[in-house]
Length: 233
Image (tube, rainbow, N blue to C red):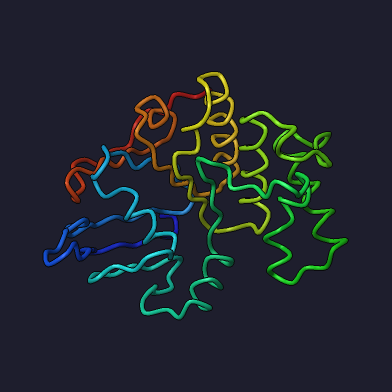
């Protein structure tokens, strides 16, 4: 049995809207093991973004248990939350979130800068990860000189460079055309096949079909959770 990387039990989250409460997550139970490739689907308002924010230690549940690689995530100070995000998690965003005035290699190296790694070592490692995503020759290019697919590859390299336990991808293909979506999902499949645990939030069924397990949220509850025959790209 693989180690549990993510353990969520009876998770609830509400937000105050004026004088009333909006109950967004209603008793979520979800376990994810090391090496899984999971998609979380749901329409707008289903709670998937809230769940992703809690998993990503960007928000906190009201009640319930959340453990990340065996570590309880609860009542963290902002500095401890940042430390855990840096240690455990790699993020990939729909909008890439690259720094426009920094080159590809500088963008990829940035998480190591925050971990206190020296300039030479982080540049060398960043170059290795750019090679890994097929962008070694673009190391000194700025984001403005790249296509959407290339920017997302830079973002994936940046997510991988700290060797996180878990990659969280929030609509990673939302800003891409269908061919580029195919290429990015193929890259994520390859990364997963090397043993990396990946959770993708998406509203696109064809993207979810390229993962190995599909969790569907509806009205703040898990409507279905099933292992699927992955479409290998």
